[in-house]
Length: 137
Image 1 (cartoon, rainbow, N blue to C red):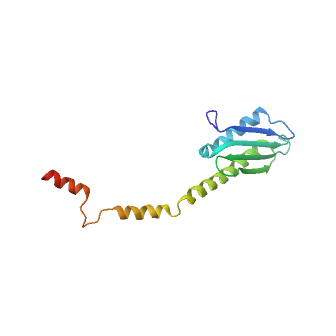
Image 2: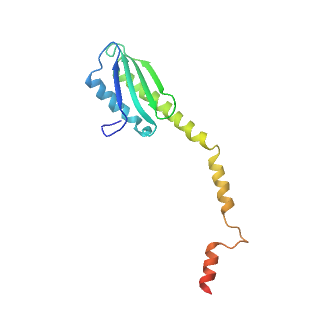
């Protein structure tokens, strides 16, 4: 979400123009979403009447799945962007948890059981013991 980021940010003003300063502030705040960059395709910031009581909509298009939308109205554009970035972080974190938890339920417990099954038993000869015996003879 910074200059070296590969996620494009599009600004659209419905009834008003989004100034360069507003775009810089929004880009700086959207940099917080950079940790989710692997899931993001593009970000749209749509403002209706950007200067007086702006209603701002933040649309995040994901590489997989439906876009996430956060919408709010505030007293200033910058305050509204701050609120929307917080809301979007919550949505992205929830989406990421859903995606990782969905893959393998109880994965931690399954890995622990597999490690126990692969652990050598006291009556079995380990590979290291077999190699030492071969070297001794």
